[in-house]
Length: 272
Image (cartoon, rainbow, N blue to C red):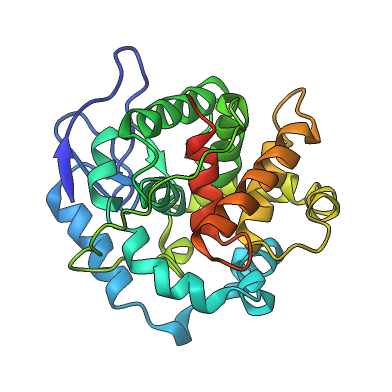
């Protein structure tokens, strides 16, 4: 949990993710959300920790969420994914220091993944975060969802050259953050915006599958790359190159496919 107020000058006031009131003073941040008080932040955290699975109505989230979440069930890479999960979240809390609007917590976790081998500098992460917020504000979005995040990645990725890097794995955080059901506790308006953009991105999934040519790749990353193609003027050229770079990093680290950690390291290394 971080507390500060670094909303850009001239930007609209953000609303509290718990009570909905404008945040006029110190901002408390956690799980990608902004809160007006420590009370509101802890209230949402408590709700997530005490979530009763039997009370969750997945139908309310819509079919696109089911399709997105179900990618793990057909993925050949889940054991390696789970092995890396805690370590990949090592920088999750720290990165909240640099958000100035609402973020999907999965995207912040993705940024933490980029830092997980020591080859991507923090300045690159901050550059990507600033671009994502710029796109969100320009389009009057509530926050940075995965589709918006993908567009920011697409705009900034330019260097697809490959050089083997280190694998300086950070220590896992003392408390692991499980994002699996974070969507059910997300701000309703932000979630609806996210789902709409995810549905738009999903229209490009077949194009991504064709580029992968049956190479095993994280299903969530397929959606993210589909979101990249929503960028005005986007072509498949960059997507094909980032897939190729991810394959090289997989070989470098001894993985058997495009696991999410490797995809994000590839993206981070491609931004200069």
